[in-house]
Each structure stands twice: as C-alpha cells, then as structure tokens.
Image 1: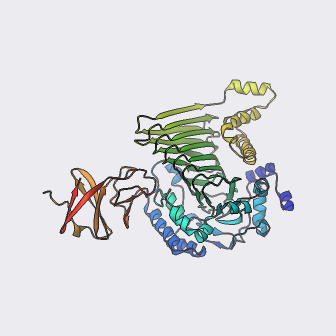
Image 2: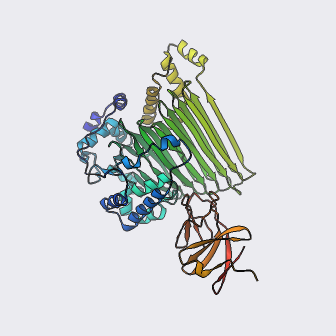
Image 3: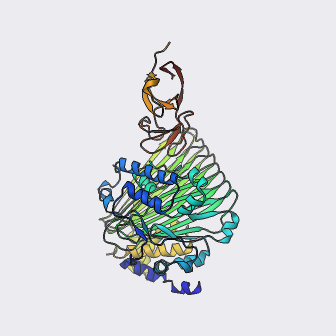
Length: 475
Length: 100
C-alpha cells in the first residue's frame, strides 16, 4: 500500500492536470454501448449486469416514461435543448468484474485514480471507499469494522443481487421513475455508485466515500444512490466528482434517494467539479421521519449547466433538515441550484444556506421552495441566500418560493446580492497581498460557511479550485 | 334516489373513468371487479390523476409519478405527501353510485 501512496500526485499537480485536461486510453473498455438510447440498449444493459426480471422491467418502464415525457419548459431551456440524446453513450463498462483490493485494480484505471488522489483519501479514512470509474464500480472496500456493525455499503449492482428485498422495498419510493424526464432516464440506464443500509442504533464510525468521474467522450453517467438509515442510526456519506477535459458535451444525470427513519441522521456531502462542457442534471431527495435529521452539503463548481435542488421532506414530528450549498459559475456556465424543504409534520425545523459567486460572464440562479403543510404546527424555517457578482458581465437570479399553509409556523427569508467592496480590497492589499490574492481570499471567506463543514482534504481542494477559478477576474 | 354516475360496463377491470360528482372531479377505478372512487386531483400538483397508470390498487400520477392507494386514498410515494379523499361507492346491477 505504501508504494501506491507515494505514487499519488500532490493536490497542486492534480489541479494543474485538471486544468489542462487528461484522459485515459479507451482501448481497454469491455463494453461500450452505441450512441443513442433504444429499448434494446436498456435490455442489453440489464442483460450485461445479469439482473433479475423485476429490475429489467423497472428499467424498461422507466424508458417508456423517458420517451413519453417532454423536455422541461422551465429553467435554462436554451441550454437544455442543446442536449443531443442521440449522441450519447449510455453505458460503458471498463472492466468485467468488481475489484475488492486496490492491488487488483487495472493499472490504467489506478493511474487515473492516483491523479485524483484516491489513495490519499484511502489513507485518511482507511476504509469505506467506493470508487466509480466510468459507469461501473471497480473498486470497493468495505472494512471489516463496517461489516461487523451490520452496515451494508456496496455498489447498487451488488445490492440488487444480494439484497433484493431491501432494494425492491425502497428503490424509487422517494424519487419515482416518473418524477421528471431525467429521473426516468436515470431509472432506465442507471449504473453503479452506492447502496447503504445502516441497521437500527448503529453509528457509522467513519464517513463512507464514493469518488467518481467521467472519462469517455460523450458518455452519459447515470449514478443511482440509495441510502437507508434505520431507526436511531447515523451515517455520513461523501461523494466527490471530477472530470477531464473534452470538447463536446457530456450528460450527467444522477438520482440520490435518502431515507432517515425515526431518530436517524444522514449527512450527504457532495463536491462537484465537472469540466465546463458537462450537463449536470441531478435529482436529490430525502425523507426524514420522526426526530430524524438530514443534511445536504452541496458544492457546485464547473459544468456547463447544473440543475440541482436537493430536497428534504420532513414527514415526522420533530424532524430536522439542513441544506448548505455553494455554487461558482465562470465563463459560459450556468449554476441553477437551490433547495426544497417540505414541512409535513409538527415541530419540524429547517435551515437553507446558499451562497454563489459569478465571474467572467457566468450565471447563477437560486431556485428554492419551502412548503409548510396544514397541521405542521410549530414548524420553523430559515432561508438565506447570498450572491457575489464579480464583474459587469456576470449575473445572478434568486427565485425563492414559499407556500405557507399553517398559521402557527415561523418563516424567515433573507437574501443579498453584493460585490467585493473596494475598502475590503484596499485593507487586504495594505497588508501586503496582491489584488488577485486579496480577491481570492475574500471569495474563499465568502464560502467559509461551507468549507468548514468539509473533511480537511476536500476543504483544501475546494479552496484551491476557487482560487483557480478566480484567476483573471482582477483588472 | 340519486342517478347513477357511470356504468360498470364502461370501466373494465384495471381501468379508470373520470366523472363529476356535485361539481367535484372524481375518478372511478375498477380493481379486479371492485369499483373504488377517489378525488381526481393529485395532492402534489393539483392536476388530474385519471390519465395515470392503474397498477393493481395503486394509481400513479402521470406527471410526477406519485402513487396513491385507491382503496384508502393514502399517499404511497413522494412527491405526494398527503392522501386523496375517498368516496363511498354503491353498485346496483350495472349502475354505479357515488356518495360525495
């Protein structure tokens, strides 16, 4: 293991590599579906994965829904309509079996992971790594400690095979196949990523991590994640994404379902760092039952268009939800992100904090919903969204929606739009910083609320990425 | 004696029919020969349910996939949170009566 750790590149060189784009030879792929999506391709995916009949039917039904549903008529429709569904590979399999040991992972795949710093993450957390390369989980290491506690942490394909009773019971109960066109697409062609089940009363002793990226040009990546925290349990799941540079658009459309039963707690941390030609259209939703807590920590940098609105349905009395999100939009990028909280039970509380920065002509949109149902007596919610606009070419919209149907509830909303003050800059520069460093420092400070919630290595990477994105925005 | 709202022969097993009962949109469902009546309005977005797929005793909203149990009205999956109203159905020969 020690040898591999030495082989890992430093975060600085990682960013340099990322800036200039890198990708692996695609010669070693075991299977790559043709362009476009047909019933036959969906059937072939199911066949290749050796799935039971019920999952095959699930996919085919979703395919029918996907075909019948029109494209969304809201949001950035001009960009959305640029997606050419006929020009996408819907399934790529890079190796024919799931590996459990790092030593067994093929060398070219390992090199890519090394550049992304996976071994360092492994060293830090020592277990619980589930790394997705292309569409298939190729490396999965569930520590003996997790197994001893009864925690199930595996890729979704394994879960379908080994825990069909749990998957069938909960899959698509939070996000049905017909929820939206992209959830239907995901349900039809999903591949890889994580299934987590935490038994009653068990606290996961370490965060569970999945790290994935897109490599094949024009390849859609359709991750499916299902996390179930049974009564009184606790789990923290971390997902990080990065993608190499390519010239044409790729589509990423994930579905993430979280279920927190009574008194359980789930935190889901995401750092998205897609390259700027990627469409990132994600559906994320959680249910929190009595006295349960769900937290989404969501960082969005990169991509061409991101549409992502993590949602929490507070279904049991005393349930609590928190959504922390940050977005950075640079040249040619639109970060359309937000949050949804539904208070459907008494004494539920929620907090939404969203901060965005736009520079070089980028655009950010905060699109949020808070709904308090009749009978949700004592519900409390606080929404705060702040936007920082770096130049005259950039823009930011805030579109908060509040539907309050219960008089005995407390709702707070706060929003601000600002630019970096000259006095702030002058002060920082008077202490010896260059204008660029001062600006980057102020922007990093703006995101501090978010960064301090991240594990150390992610916090360091995010600060560097923000600094990198800010380059050239001075003067 | 009220007038029948529909005929059983118009609603083959596994299908639905939209009707109006005292100005309220109601959906009739034939589940294995038994007729059930629920309000024809999804509690998620306020649209009709009758164009959705009837799967056993569950109706799926055609727009966002929320499911309701047509026997009890209960919401079974998100994005619906609260159930739909149910109505008492009486069948007399081929005639269907609904008490709104």
